[in-house]
Each structure stands twice: as C-alpha cells, then as structure tokens.
Amino acid sequence: SYELTQPPSVSVSPGQTASITCSGDKLGDKYISWYQQKPGQSPVLVIFKDNKRPSGIPERISGSNSGNTATLTISGTQAMDEADYYCQAWDSSTAVVFGGGTKVTVL
Amino acid sequence: QVQLQESGPGLVKPSETLSLTCTVSGGSVTSGTYYWTWIRQPPGKGLEWIGYIYYTGSTNYIPSLKSRVTISMATSKTQFSLRLSSVTAADTAVYYCARGVDVPMVAYFDLWGRGTLVTVSS
Image (cartoon, rainbow over all chains, first blue to last red; front, side, top):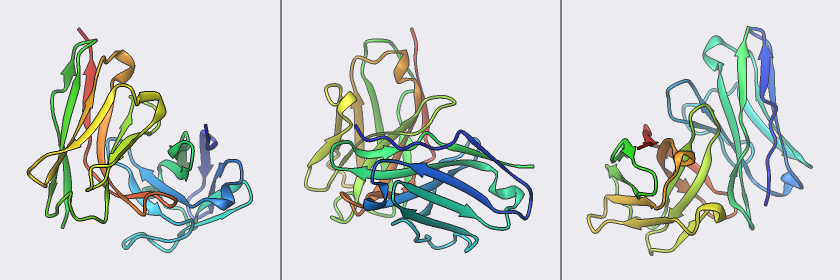
C-alpha cells in the first residue's frame, strides 16, 4: 500500500518560514492536498492540486510537489498557524491516503 | 452555504454495529459533482479515510475495513450513512463526514463536518 511520511513536529519562530515535508514514492506524479487542523476542530483544506489555495486561505501558505517530496510552506508564520498539518494524495491501489501529520509549534 | 453534520450514538458496544448519518444542509448528495466521504481520527492520532459514495451509488472503501463497512445514501437526497460492523475498541474515533472533489486521481476534501466521537466500550 502507498504511504506518505511527514515529520512529527516542526518548530518555527514568529515571522519566520515553516516548511513541512511529505514524502512518498514518485509523489511528484500525484496531486497533493494539505489540511490544517487546530485542537478540537475539523481539518480545513489549505492547499489542493499541489499549490492551489481555496478562497480565504492567505497567500503566505503555499505548496509545491516534485520528485518524491511535497512541501507546505508557511511564510511569516503567526501564532494562529500553530496546528497539525496533514498531507493527502490519491493512489491507484490505496485510493485516499493521508500522511501521519506534522505538529507545527510557533515558539 | 453547504454544511455537513454528523449524527448518531456516541457509545457502541464491542461486536455491535456503528451507525452514523451525515446531513447535508444547503445541498444535495445527488448533485453528481461530489463524492460523499467518511474519515475517522482515533484520539490523539492521524486521519484515516474510510470510504466514499457517489450519487450513482458506486462506493469505494479502504481495503482494511472493506469487509465491515457500508456507506449508503438515504432516500431523502440530503443524507448519507456509515455502518461499521463488529466494532472493537480500535474503532473508537472521531468520525467526520466530508465532501470529496475531483475523485479519483486528484481527490481532495473541501468541506468537513464538525465530527462526532464514537467510543466502543461495554
């Protein structure tokens, strides 16, 4: 079955850039989506089709996908960005697969 | 504005069947554009896709749960349901219903319910 691997945690200082990676075999051949989940809340879609932002998502959140790694980048990180982030892709054998999630801490 | 809301028992006994309903307000599950999906999250853990149903009635389930899962549409056109049989403590989770877009190949979830916690315990 297909797997997506994320680092368990990422720490960032306010105003700096946070990069969250998601790795999988030939991931660049698939479309990646990213979700933000704050404590006690439902996940929210922040990136789809690798780098598209839904309406209402700030431009400082961006995504890229190439080779075996997709990256979610949060520029000018704010306290409100502290959350768990999950990557997700479609695989022909597994259908929908999520990464294990990355906890972003704004120090 | 379309909203999703899960409902159902919060406590299920081991070996029994978990049954949940998702109500779509402001929209219809027969629109032909979306895939109506169930996703769960065990306490303190990550997200796990369970399966989806399309307006034609076609379904797709995660292989590990396929023998125990049924997702169906209600005749009301504004609800779809999840049934998970022979539950164990490992099925304890927050269950979310969500709206899937561009399935397959792209497959992302642009709208989620608030989730409902189901605990499996005697």
